[in-house]
Length: 139
Image (tube, rainbow, N blue to C red; front, side, top):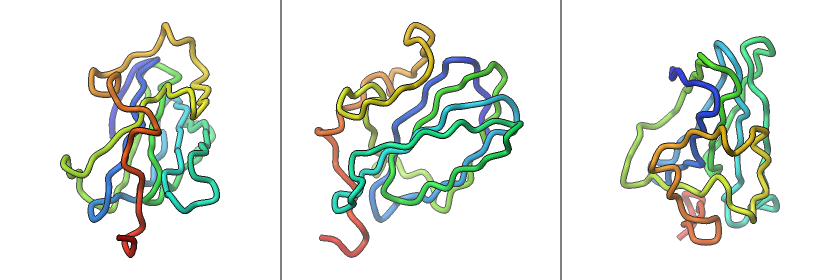
């Protein structure tokens, strides 16, 4: 579980095979806007994204299979965000996509002046510059 304040933006992150991760995420206090981007090269929804508001009140969870970059922005102070993953964090396999890539057209709902990003998340490459996800059987 992580605890974050209003405006904290994380992502968009993913891990390549053989260290890909399946995630189940939810909010236990406060709220976030959760974002996933399809990075599976052969998918009909490749490059498309989905946003879901996860709150302690609506009790929604989001299941994120391998092949999706994931990020979120915190909508309330003192928000607690819970992750469950099926694989360990493996830094050598970690990749990321710029949250503000104009090709993705993600509406993060908050005024950009309120965004709080780590240095790492501020310097991620654009969507057309990253390694996309290949299924385990792909070469």
